[in-house]
Each structure stands twice: as structure tokens, then as C-alpha cells.
Length: 501
Image 1 (tube, one colour):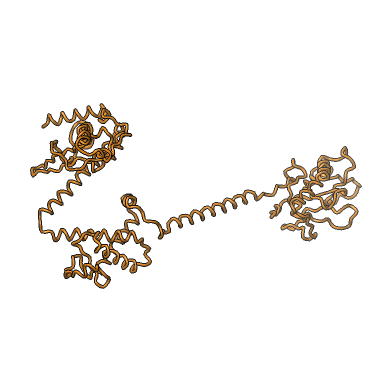
Image 2: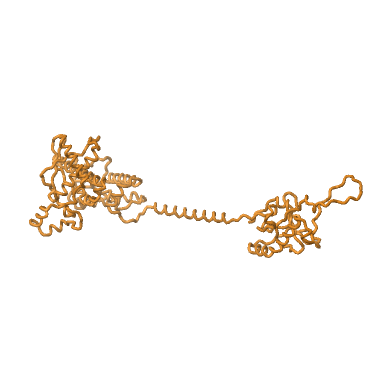
């Protein structure tokens, strides 16, 4: 759509074309005649009449000059504009054809501007008695200029819509991209009902790393499992129901929906309790149909709940205090071994010079730590280390140095003063052997020579193959130690502590 030209153009300029120019030609408006020029204001001759008041002369039409030598400057400019119009007439017609802008002529009355002045017209010819035809807005606003050096006759070029079209296309592409991204996010958030069961190792890892909405759903699932089992056991509190003993026939038949029982005195994996888990699972899925629970996840949670109640039943019904004390002692030993592995692993990670021992620490893990199974009754409690029979002296020395380095860097400042906080429990060397089985898949320098010799002499030939020694490791006995810089710090710290004692 071509915008309308400014109104001041219609007021200040008219188009003049000679008789040789076709009425369909499109030209620019020339500048108006200068009223101050002598050629445009002829002086009337003195006829001797009375010098009374006279009316001012009317507008005089500029006569057509016969030659450029008698033409004034303004008329000469008009003549050059006519020549230019004759030369650009074919180009204007071709441009109008290419732009599909037909020449439009309207009536004379329609050529009046908003200010009441006649608009630009094209002379119909000197011999024609018809009034001049107005120039249409489409013809007048084409980007052709009659005199490009005259600012009054220069017609502004129509604004192009290329920038607006480009902006519209970019906006549409952006909207399409946003919609595609939104659909992808919605698809990713949809729950996958028929997904395969997640391995147990990955499930535990994800629970440790993410405690968001999934944590809330797990708590909700636990509460629903407890409620379902409570309803099926016909109990209203958290205590264990006192049910009559089952007959041999009922024991052989197993639990049913009408006579549901869970034998907490048996192991959770017993066939009787396994049948009870299936009944609870069927009842649970029938109760919460639209929850979208996975059968494997719900069954694992039911088994975990029954196992916890089985342990609680054992604690409540065990009358022997010796068994209870042994269970607590065994649990404390396991926790101390785990804490020992964590401290050593963090020490290796904290020193860049020890990063080469990270694979070795990962292979040792908690099971490869020596246990301090003897705890005395004194205060503070003293823990005696039980030596592992398969270890080499190099590996034992390396691990003890890691303990000292951890104590030095974490619990003491550079000045040698103890920091606030409780240090790890003190472990003493001993000659007590460990009852733990030998650990497998370690590099050869980690095994003692006497232990390997005893295997070849006293055990079967397949014993060394079952040990699965890692012969591909490049670790040597000489390299299984701390660097010299860290070793000197450890020795100096130990000497200071001995002097204090």
C-alpha cells in the first residue's frame, strides 16, 4: 500500500508538460515561477493616463520560449526538466508495469487537496479545450525526480516494507521455536508407566542425589503401604497384634485374603511371607488404581516394610541380652570401618600428589579396611587393630600414613595446635589376626609374599586363580608409599606427638 504524499506538495507545485509529452507520462512537479524575477513581472508602459489607483496585475502565464538564448534561468530549468521527462518516459512506463501500479486518472473535482487548492495536473494540450487531468497519487509518488538538485521539487521515495516483513518472519520463527520447546518439556514431564524396572544400584544413587518431589512421593508410598498392611492385619495401632497360633493346615496352605497373616517370626523371604507380599500388592494396586505406581517399586517397598517389622519383632521378643549386645557391637564395628574408609579416601582426594592411588582406594572399599574389633572398658576407649593376613607391609604402612596425614591436615593448624572438634578414635597396633576373608582383585604389591607362599604350599592350585590378582596394574612395591614431601611431614608430626606424650 503506497502512503499518501504530504499535503504541502500539492500546495506549492504543479506539473507542466509540453505538447509533445503524452498525458499518460508520470513526471515530477517543477518549482513555481519566481515572482521577483524581471521576466515574470513585466513593467507596464506609461500611456499618459491618470495616475489613479490601479488594480494589481493578475497572474501571468509564462510564455513558451523559442530558444535557450532568450530564456531566463528559471525557464531554462523548466526546459531541461521537460527534456528529462521525455527521456525517462519509457523507464517510467516500464517501472509502473513491473510494480503493477496502473495509471489512475480521476475527475477534476477529485484533484482538490484537503486545503481546497487544486492538486498537481497534467496539461491536456494547448489545442484541447478539456480541463487538465489531475495526477493520481500513485503516479505522483513514484521515486522519479524532475530536478534532483532542487529541494522543492525532489519527491521523497516511498518507504519500503522489507524491514517490516523481515521482522514479521523472525517473530513467526521465534513463536514456532517457543511452541516446539514447550511441547518437548511437556513430553519429558509425562510419567512413563510402562518403563522397565530401574536397577537397584541406580535407584539408590538417584535417591541420594535428588531429594525433591521424588522424596515426597516415596514418603507418600511408604505411608500408603503401612496403611494397607494395617487394614489387612485388622489392627489400629503400631504394635504387633496378638493372634492365635496357626494350625499345621493353615501353615501349609499359606495366607489368604480371608485369613491374612504375616509370620514375623520367620524370615521375610520365607515362602509364607512371600505369598503374603503378593496378597498385599494385589490389594494395594486395587485400592490406588489411578496413582500410576509400578508393580516392582511397590513390591520392594512392601518387602522392606515387612523386613523392618520382622527386625522389630526380634528386638521385642529376644529375651537374651547377650544376643542384643553382640548385635549392637557388630553394627558399631561396621560403622567404624566405613568411617575409616571415608577419611582415607578424602585424604587422597585432597592432595593432588596422591591422585594416582584413587583406583587402589576404590578397590579396597569398606571391606578392605582393617577392623578394630576389640574395644576395652577404659576411658577413653582403646581400639586394637586386627591385622589382615593377606596384606603386605607396604600397603599397611601406606594406609597408616594416610591416617596420620588426615589427622595432621584436618585437626591441626600449621602451627601444630589442635583445632576445635573431636578427633577420630585412637587405634593401637596389635598382633591379633583378623577373621575377615582375604580381599580379591588387588594389585600384586598389596599381597604379602608370605601369604602368597602359603597359598601355593598349603592350599589347592586353584586358590590363586580365585584370588584374582590384578597383574595388569603398574603399581610397584617401591611406589606404594607417600611422596617425600608428605612423608617428611608425617614423620615430623609423629615425633612431636611422641615428645608430648
